[in-house]
Image 1: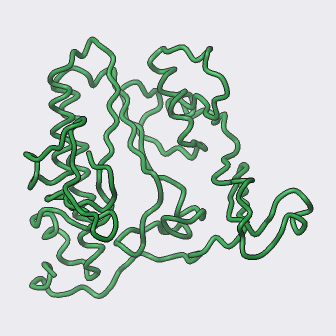
Image 2 (image 1 turned 135 degrees about the vertical axis):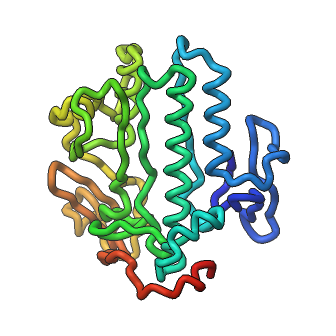
Amino acid sequence: GSLTGNVDYYTYDNCDGPGVCGYDLHEGEDVAWDQSGKYSTFLYAQRVSKILASHSPKEPIFIYVAFQAVHTPLQSPKEYIYRYRSMGNVARRKYAAMVTCMDEAVKNITWALKKYGYYDNSVIVFSTDNGGQTFSGGSNWPLRGRKGTYWEGGVRGIGFVHSPLIKRKRRTSWALVHITDWYPTLVSLARGNLSNVQGLDGYDVWPAISEGKESPRTEILHNIDPLYNHAKYGSLEDGFGIWNTAVQASIRVGEWKLLTGDPGYSDWIPPQTLTNFPGSWWNL
């Protein structure tokens, strides 16, 4: 994997500041020089397959796959871009190609789980860390805002859970789930013991996912830092001595959501459907 952001998907070159440039792909503590030139999305999926092939399906295993996709820079094999040549928006076209590559990688990992005997007792969780970057081909429509904001378009992660262990299959869940819920959920699924773990913020949400039951979570504190008081305007007094409402923060309780401060980028950005170009322009 890589330690910095915006790494080239093929060369793994990146600059983490003026004059601070280099090769950023590692396997464990070693620099993976021999992997240069391989598209990272497919490389990561191949690495997962290799791990599964060398591990025993009779032994527990947890694999966290942090794809680089679909972060910038917008890069994918040319043949995948060609599929979306009718899209007038060049960034959206490349983004769609990257998503297709990632879909294929997930398919190949699922196939490896079946091939090596893990699938029947596996749970696949696909999620994201934030909303799409609308400046770089992403879309959060019909949600408001973009990556880097506390609007729903910035914090609501769309994903799926796939497993033969799910009781009510092929359905959409609107249960409230936070990233902190994955730890107790997965540990409980693996029949682990959480009795000695104190102060967890998360809940076991497997009954909500598998059976469609009500989620035990009723609120999410998206962001708050009571020690931060550098807002340009506002004061604690303006917030009745409780909270400086000029500080950027967000909390959701049930169907209600409160944002304080200036959240920024509050637009609803519609799907990017520009006029289609002729096919000869697909490789811009």
